[in-house]
Length: 504
Ligand SMILES: *Cc1c(COP(=O)(O)O)cnc(C)c1O
Image 1 (cartoon, rainbow, N blue to C red):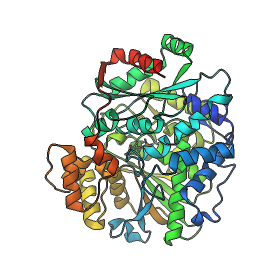
Image 2 (image 1 turned 45 degrees about the vertical axis):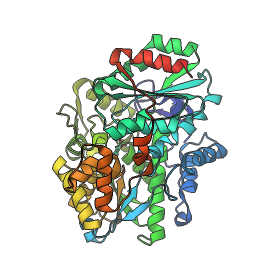
Image 3 (image 1 turned 90 degrees about the vertical axis):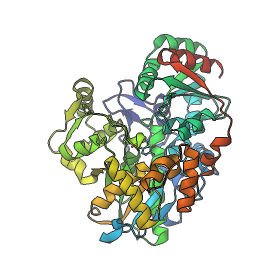
Image 4 (image 1 turned 180 degrees about the vertical axis):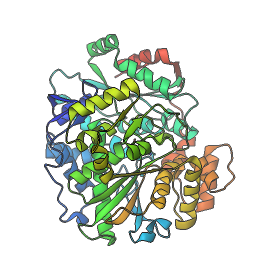
């Protein structure tokens, strides 16, 4: 796919490189390409292909203005030796689960073997490599990029790990003081790298997020930075460079199921995806468009079930109470990447997408035209889990399958267990988005274990009770020196970014 444009208009065209560098289209829409699916990923010989080879094929099909050498270099840098599994994203059979009773065996696709133990590593190890190869050919582009991100916990660390010491880039991450877990805070405050800045903000995540949006809209600041050769950018999950790396693991899962003999070539597979911003599951749709036999994509939500309501009624309504749950990365009321799905399922109706997004912004809700909901429902199923159901799912999965899951994955487990397999599905795959050791307290308490106050002591309790092992990079955090201890008010975040940029 060489030409991208906004979901809301076709008036301006961009290369994949420009789309990745810009992140979001000037009219507020997301970058899409009408060439999606023109180049198919061949299914012949899929079983023999490893992750790196598949990554080269999928990225090559989706980012046609990168040369084969550029793609190959990006893939090697991102995935060779950075994930604690040869498969990068291994598939594990869920034996003994109630899920497999209808004849379609269930498995888990573990997406959390990267440096920060959450699925965002798969994309954020790749995005900086893709971005580093954009600057040279873009006219008028600033020499250096400063990534600025507000995080509620997981994105910040994965972005730091991806962009640390990336050439031509700096990264600044803001997190709400006292509102992330101790493990998450240490993951960020101990981050090494000459180009990284981390800062706690007095306020909650929304305060930090709103302030970051103001920083992006601050023309005077942009002018001062441009004079220093620095341009601001975002590592947000709407970036094309974060979406396309996620398409790869759908193919990798299929290849592993073939190798294990769980499916035969051509068999359709159902994927159940713990969803927040709709990026992960949208990548499954892209995989289908590239030729992967996908039976159905199941959206699993937590108590913030705005997508469940949308997919069952056709009305998206963000005016509702917000719940802080044990699955914080899915606590989202505006699911940004949904806009791309609306674009593709409406056959590229930019006017409709612009109209619906306008209504969402001004009225807080929109309703799909007749017909479109039915089309979406043919491909996307949905379900959600309450807080009690999440805890019960963690316990059930451990008791029935001897397999430990985190609270995000547990939403998907619950949804899959409640619903029969999609028609025609020969296997069901649950995407596991975080290591259970990122949330040791919730997981241990769900199993009925007594937990000490300290999260690291909680990890020990969990290891002893289950015979599983905490990922080394989480366990060793308690020994690492804290390198970042700045705390600012929201009004001083812009000055913090400027000071960080001056160090680039
Ligand atoms: C970000 C995240 C999700 C949600 O993924 P989306 O692409 O935003 O739908 C789910 N689980 C975990 C652990 C995450 O970090």
